[in-house]
Image 1: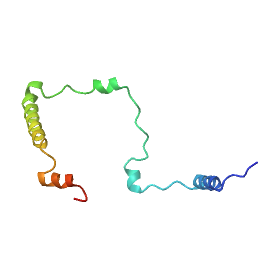
Image 2: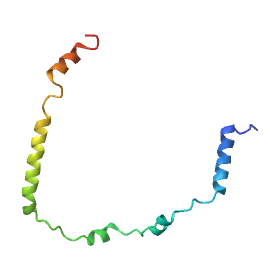
Image 3: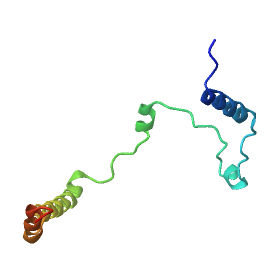
Image 4: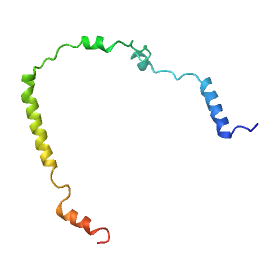
Length: 99
């Protein structure tokens, strides 16, 4: 039978040491915050959706805000369509490193 490699022995020793260690004590602030409380129980999504109130903004009221935002985004896109490099930088880059 071949002996275990040293790295595997070291790993086993570390795991054994970690298993014997005491848990890290929580600070009083963390305990008071409820960090030790159990996870909430899972509920079906339909139950959650049923609790959501209907939307408060009518589509007709939201249309001007959406239109304004769309116009601002189109204007911004127009500004971004310009050349990325100015003519001088582009000429210098085309000459290359040795130029």
